[in-house]
Structure formats: structure tokens, C-alpha cells
Image 1 (cartoon, rainbow, N blue to C red):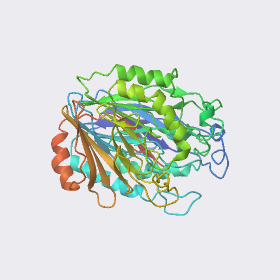
Image 2 (cartoon, one colour; image 1 turned 90 degrees about the vertical axis):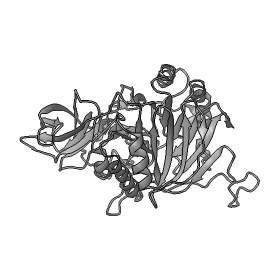
Image 3 (cartoon, rainbow, N blue to C red; image 1 turned 180 degrees about the vertical axis):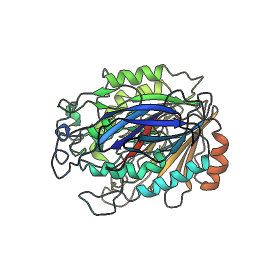
Image 4 (cartoon, helix red, strand yellow; image 1 turned 45 degrees about the vertical axis):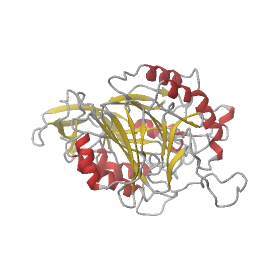
Length: 467
């Protein structure tokens, strides 16, 4: 399990950990890194209006962990002081079960007005996920945040607010991420084909992926040069197994077309999945391949994704494709080239965790200005409520449930059997009771792989962890 934390200096720090709160006998040294003003690529990140010193990011890895055991840990040093003690449950490599809390586009909020509109609803998302974690007890799980993470967009102190806000969750569970347009996009980004000239703009506020790359450390070693003095962009694409599920994360902001390093990774990874061990495959990325939102600017992006990525998904029988970017929830039938059928993954847009700006649904072609928004047959459920999704899988089935922030209850769910058959999709659920009686029974000995921890603002010492 990897733990990352921020301090005001580069003095040596460590992680102390053990299976007893009063017996933290193991020690992992933490390496340190940081980024500078000159690493930012555009305004406001490279200007005094947006820049604040980010402090020093420390990164320690706890090793030789027993399977499915609660560990206690703290970070710091004898000279600089130690954090309070936190705990997590190590992943269980012998279990077939998996639990994850999955969403995109959450952001953060501030107790004051600032240069950017913040995401007040992000507080409720964290509140309900924390409720669900408490209901799990000593069962491992992880969080999956698929792009548009802090919405700092060049105003660096918003990263500190974000990490402070997720700390109660991220100190307990691995916190996985993939890159979105608001972490990365800038006018001179190195891969910008002609078809993407109006898609990849200035959404990253000049950060060009640098804070994202330094503050997180995902599995694998994917990276792309920024073409500037800035550090390479990392955490772009990777995969791991948890229980009966093989999880794959991809980048929609860097080269994904046929022949690219990323395309070769996705092809090789999907073709190499052991479907006896992991009968379910879940792919997550930021911009969606399918949506019925009236999101015209990304139309060519979706066409390119269908041309270069969809054949890999269909031919390798991907179970579920999860996307953010559109700030609503929408679940589709199993899709291949806009056609419902037994081939193709179930696509679900889950970008409803906090950001509130969103265009209308697609209107009727013959009534483009009227508030009439027919729902195509391929769109099985769509809603405007904020919330998150909860994934629970065993060797026999995988269930994805959509939990609404306004009441903490399940408003949509879909179950996919190991055979590929898709069942139901009825809305409903009992919130806390459903979680306590359903998930607790479903996740005995599940294994959690990813990122556990917390991060935060200086000068106080904060932590973020990754498994």
C-alpha cells in the first residue's frame, strides 16, 4: 500500500505501520518530490494569480502486508512530528469479490468565494461514500475517480482543499484516478490532431498534468512528455485485478489511436486477461464514447473512440465501460456501433459527483429549440441527480448501483452475469439497509488494490495513499 502526504519541507519522513494501533513496528522510508512555477504551461497556473507553493510530496510504500488484514499507520518523523494514526484493510488476493465506489467530475468546495465556481455537491458525495465504508466494516474496497478531479484549473490552492475534503475517505481506501481535460488540456499539448483542434483547449488552466502527476502515483509506468521543462505526465493508463474483476484505466486526453503506445497497451492488456480468474472486465476513462447529452463539441472525439477503441472492447468482451465528463448519470444497453445486443459492453456515464454545469439532453432533430428530449432506446436510464456508483462483484455476477446524493438511496442498478447476460436494471434500493445487508454479505475477503490515503494543504502534514 502506497501512502502519499504533503509537508512544508523536504526533510526525511517515513510511514510507520503495523497490525496493532499500539504496535507500529514496521517503517517505510518516503521519497520526496515537488513541482515549481516554471513547470506550469499556461495562465493562470504559471502566474502569481494562480500559483501557490505546493509544498513537498512524500511517497512511502508499506510492504509485506498480510492478506485481508486491518493495518494501522501514521506518517512523519521524530523531529517534525507524526500524524494521527489511520487504518485500512489490505487487499485479499485469495478472494473472488470486489467492491468499489466509482464516479467522475467531483471537484471540491471552499468556505469563501474564489476565482472559480466550486462544486458544493462534492461534500454530499463524500458523506454518503463514508457511510458506505463504515457499513463495510473490515472489508476492503477502493475509490475510482475518473477525471476532472479537483477542478483547480490553475488555482493551485484548490488542490489542497480537495485533498482535505477526501481525507476521511482516502485515509481508509485506495483512491484510484485517471486523467481528465481539467487536469491536462492546454494550447500546446503535444498530441493534438487536426480533428481535436476544437476539443483540446485550455481546460487544464495551464497545469498540463503536472500537479496530477506529482500528487498521485498509480500502478504501471505510463508517461508522455509535455514537450516543455515540466515533468512527464504520468498515471495515464494502467490495470489491476481485484477479486473477479480486471480493471483498466485509460486516457482520453493523450494519444489513443491505433499504433499509439496507449492503444498497444489496451490491446495487449485486454487480450491477456485471464477470464477464468477475472470473468469481468471494467474499462474507465474520462470522455464518454456514448452519451445522449447535447455535447456537440466532442462528437468527433466520440467517433474516433468508436473507430479505434470500440473494436478492442467488443472483440475482447469488455463487461462495463465507465465514463465521466458529462455531469449526469446515464446507463446504456450493451452497445456496439450504436446497436443494442449481446455484443459490446454496457456503457455508463458517471460524471455526476459534484460539477453542476451541463448542457441539455439531445433535443428532437426537427424541434431543436423546443424542450422536448426523447430518450433513445439504447439509453436505459438517465438522471440529473448528483451521486456516485457502487460496484459489487463476485465470481458469478457484477452489480453496479447508482446512489443519489439527495437521499443516499439506490436509483438505478444493473447486474451482469459472468456469462455476459445483463439482468434487469430496475431502480430502487434501501440506502443504508441495502448496503448493510447486501454489500456486507457480498464482499467477504474481497481484495482492494489502489490508493489509500489523504493529502492536503500546508503547513499541516497531510497524507494520501495508494496500494
